Length: 362
Image 1 (cartoon, rainbow, N blue to C red):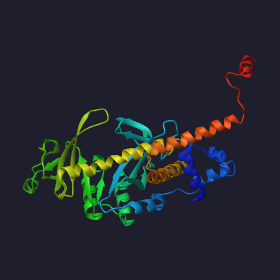
Image 2 (cartoon, helix red, strand yellow):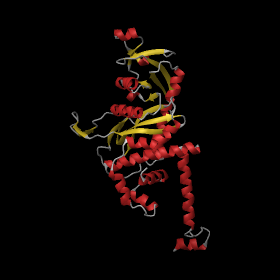
Image 3 (cartoon, helix red, strand yellow):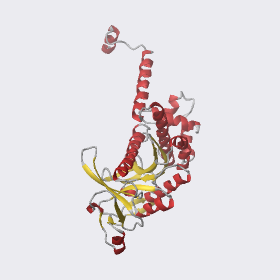
Image 4 (tube, rainbow, N blue to C red):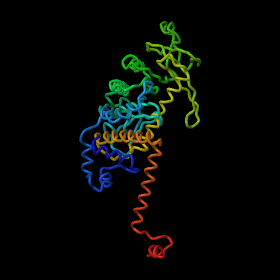
């Protein structure tokens, strides 16, 4: 790993505030100048292939044939940063509104208790169009998120990464993606379908064009469905769950592996939630949202370094059996101890000493 990148990654993990080139230079006692850090962030843009070079060793050490590859997208919010091709407005499905930031897609490898990003893409809105309704200029990405999804999947296959199942949310559950996973990538998938997705309940119904909404299908074991436009039969499993707020929801899960039971489908799909932990740790423990970088290249390279920081945290977590937040808290506590020791060098007056009282009244 590049020496500056290696140092920058440690800085992102250790920092609890904004991460700047000047800040990194300061903690090295100016042995590395802030200009050198800035040049590193500006020189060349790191890519998903570079990330695989860093993630490969940990993934190969834990890989299993029944591992899963989880896909999801998220938004790194940047409300106060100037808009550009990378920092733009994206619809946030969680908040039901558009937010400004970096929209990114991750391929997260999950094997046993270990997870690591093995590929990523940043959504770049390089095209400018005029909204026909408002007349306002808007940015548009020339490459769709579903195209990024397929590219990341085939990249993982070409890297000879061992996994059996692809897990994703309903956003990626298109007919084209299902066929691509099964026929091009030669993998199985488990995905939820939206409640209004049309399915046939038999090959005969499919041939006759008889389709029903998937939310009308009665739950049970060994149910096969044929989503409209999909060539293959899929195992159907309806899962009822409660979210963190106690609100009940329903997942209409389908799997290309028709030998799975409902329980197996549910157990495997639960591994997808590891991607939520990944997003939280990336933002909370790897300083993803704490860079004041101004240009698309420096912003993209800071993002890449945050992914590397997550991988480093995962490696240490694997060795220490501490989760990322516990590790970050431990580092922070040790930092506080050193700060208090440093403070003692200045011989600060005690609250009980007369000198302190006279200092306040001066």
